[in-house]
Length: 271
Image 1 (spheres, rainbow, N blue to C red):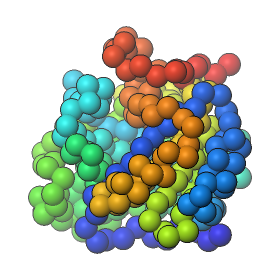
Image 2: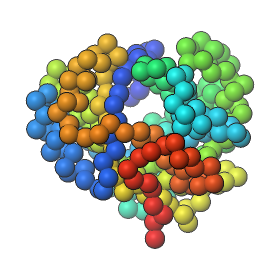
Image 3: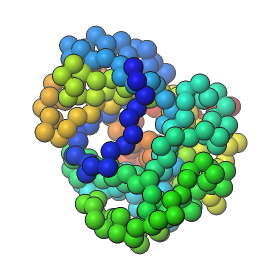
Image 4: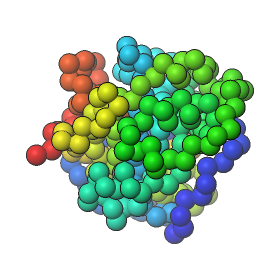
């Protein structure tokens, strides 16, 4: 296994994905299913911790668009990575060690998903300025700002809209990566999924929510959607809604929870 490569600057290709939320912490069970799969999956890269700060506007338009399943919707987040060995003390891990920090716009149009990444420029600067103070020193902010870095891409988001966003929740989890023998289908397993509320640009470390479940995702190019459907037949799992952003908002901001989002398990407040 190797470390993950740096993010590419090439335009993102549309992809297709399926998600499965499995109650209880059973990543070993899911790993067994993956390794016994007839697509001959092999683990690639080293496991790592993925950290996200999700952004939304004051009316939580992104949250409600995802909750209602709108055909064209966006998620906004700053993402960075931490080594697995430092996860025991999550605050120390998240605020003292980070790699590949970047701002992401994830756009879903029907079954098509694209992720647009910014590690510098106006979009990155706009969200960087809103980060909790204890995280800002982790992320190098380049001085050269390109005001056109958003308008030149096909994600349908303006810089003026990005500037209306605010940090809402922090999410952290461990991810393992697998690739099929023909290198066309990817599987990830996410476990130890945690959420923290962000208020007035500060992380509330005293209230942590944990999802008593593991999430398996099947991913591939949109052109290979039939191959992904064939792959999914060998996972005896129900297809579920499992947006980490929606789950996090439901946990940290329970006053706006909606009964429309039916899932088999909800995050629980850690003791």
